[in-house]
Length: 353
Image (cartoon, rainbow, N blue to C red; front, side, top):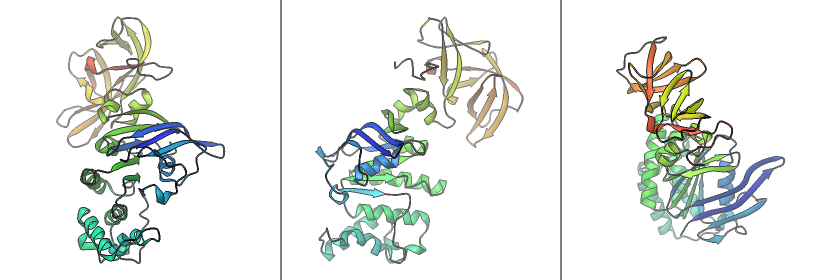
């Protein structure tokens, strides 16, 4: 069992609080992604689990056991970093063998060879085993770095933005490989990133971290379709969710002098922030609202339009073949059942309050 549980974790560096009463559960065998901006506390969370940080307060449990008094080597976790942490003058084989030759481990030469061969086959780097690391590409070096973790056969993999230094095409390829690796190994993965595409495409669950606090935990669809607040709403999706201030009156949205339908909302009149994803905004003649096309971004399969409503702007995704020009006046509506409402002061999703 490799269930991870953090209870009331606090960590400060001088006057800066990195983690604030952090509670987190990663189930055994789960691929959990911690999503947050730079400085949110992602790396500190991993280091706390790995035993590399002395905590101010709180408990770390792995497999149901409090490991607060255990050293990093005793915790049976492997940490994969953005920096490859390889020995450049050694071969790939030498780098993979290195963690198995430490003084605290005792493996026979046959077992070392078997573990190295298995890891190399899993990561498809068998043909690189006798090559010096300094002659590898960035993607190959990251595979070797992951291989150094695999040979130890840990119960927990902690991954600190391991793909962020790679180019876009290679990141996409390694995302698929890491998901396959997780499925093959059956281990618990905790992966941290600032990239919402990585989070949405890889995680069984996502935890959104902000200033050392966990804001929301859920499946990718939970986070995308039912964000707890406006911060989470803007954290995922590209383009992100449109947030527009307006009024809710008579079960309809009043925005910039236009009235648009909303489903299942209170008839009570109040000021709210409306939230709608770009794919749920539609261009159609005779639609209830009007705006001017401010910008057009052609992304191949789709176009992303920015509509200027005067006091606010709205992102809309349309098929690539849609004919539209900058400065053109267009009529638009939205899918009424896909509109969220947030409190304009607290940012909380009113449907989840």
